[in-house]
Amino acid sequence: MNKQAEDIKAIREMMERSTKFLSLSGLSGVVAGVTALIGAAFAYFYLLRDPSQTDYNRMQEVLILLADALIVLAISIGFGIYFSWKKAKKNHQKLLNSVTKLVIYHLSIPLITGGIFSMVFLLRGNIDMVASATLIFYGIALVSASKYTFDEIHYLGLTEIVLGLLSAIFMYKGIIFWSIGFGLCHIFYGLAMYVKYDLKKNDKHNSTFK
Image 1 (cartoon, helix red, strand yellow):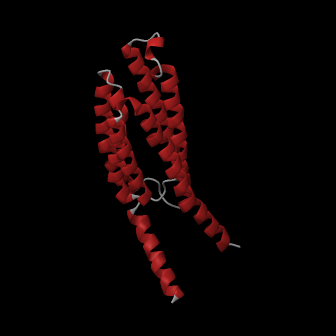
Image 2: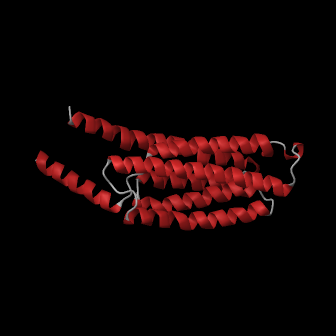
Image 3: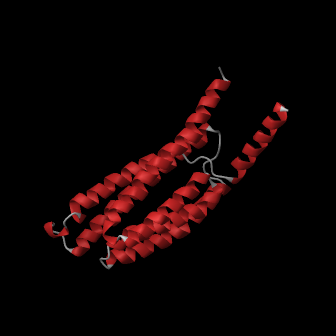
């Protein structure tokens, strides 16, 4: 009976590996969250806390905020690829395969659309709506791609959408909701996924060879 259960479990794991992107590391979420909090703190204390005290005009402020966001994005993506590559290598899997391409495809359409949409707000000087737009479209992207990876990504996406809607309602608190969504939520979900999928798997692997 135990052997049958183990065989069923092995078949299920094999099917999951072939249909889901399981190389996503929770550590990449933690790094993304910490980076987002640093970027938000820079934007707030350097520009948004009291814009009248800065010597920059509107276009210069937009360019600084854009550069800040791009740096946060680049660091998050870079570490995401790095940790996913390490996990895939450890599990003797290819990082880039057909499932990975599906994840990228379902992520990219809402992200690119949301990025362009947010850029319009930013260039028009409507900075308060940028936080809402980025959170909502990012959440939609996560929900869209979640069927090809861990279930936690689906719930993270829903959380981001709710925070984006709240940010639209409480418009002048956008930096707070942005910090919660891209910062604290990434750290929380990242740690939860790391403990659930990485640490427990490592403990199980180590106990097998004792």
